[in-house]
Structures are given as C-alpha cells and as structure tokens.
Amino acid sequence: MCSTLAPQLEAAAWTLDRVHRLPRPARFTADTPKDVIARFHYYTSKEAIFSSTRKMEHLPEPYQKISIYADISVTTMAKRREFINITKTLRNHQVPYRWGYPTKLLIWHRGKTEAILEPEAGMAKLKEWGLHHNMGHQSPQKTQLKKMRAEWSMVGSPSHPNMHTED
Image 1 (cartoon, rainbow, N blue to C red):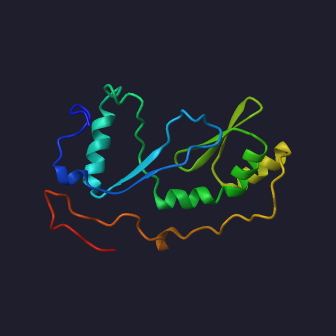
Image 2: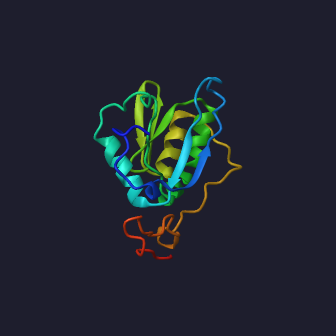
C-alpha cells in the first residue's frame, strides 16, 4: 500500500483475521468490482488506518477508486433486522431507501424523503402509502442488547502483546 496512505505500523499490525470478497449484486454489471470485507486482528491497526484516511480528501493513485467504511456492529445489525418487513416491502415495490445513522431508514417516496426511526412507524407509513407487505414473514423479536456477546474482544497490539483478555 502507498506510504502516504498507510500509517507507519509494524508488519505484525497488518495481521488480518478474515478477508472475504462479497458476491456482486445482480443489478450491477460484470465489470463492477466486488466489495471486500477485511477484519483486522488488532483494533488499534484498524483505527490507525481509519484515522489516516479521514485526514485525506482523496486517496492517491492507484487507490482513488477504493472506498473504506467502518464496520457495522452486532448491535446495529440487530436493530436493522427489526426493519426486515419494511425493507422487504420497499424492495418488492421498488421504493428506494438507504440506512441512516443512528439506525433509521431514509425512504424516497413520491418525491419526498421520509425518516423512519422505529419499525412500528415504518409499518404505519407503508399502510398510509398503500404498500402491502407479506404477512408470512414476521419481524424478529427485539434483541436484548445487554445479553448480546461482544463482537470484538480486547487484544493487544504488536507494541503491547501482553494486553489480552477473553470475553
């Protein structure tokens, strides 16, 4: 990686636990690059890279077409699953939407953007718009966040190898 992009990290800091290339969505052409997800072994390494890229307006050549995004936590994914009936209905009716932060749906309908913060409000909005959803699939139960297992356990960095805890 280019030295102007990469923070000055020891070689061991670049350890990756997993790297996956995702399937290309059907709506994209064959020449569209596939997304790649990488999980850094050391949290400090990931944060150093994010810090470095946030300081740049554009990545240098040949990396200009690379987009770097933060990970999505288990908590966020659980909250998004609560909206599954709404997102399926929107896709079935070809209504464009995107996720906002904190977890909310931003829906474009009839030239207006609607922000939906709770699944119940989303279902009411679908009913108001006359968009029917499939009752066969029920939304998952609300997840008790305090019972959820942490996605990351604290691990040491190459400069502090003794700092390691198990969850």
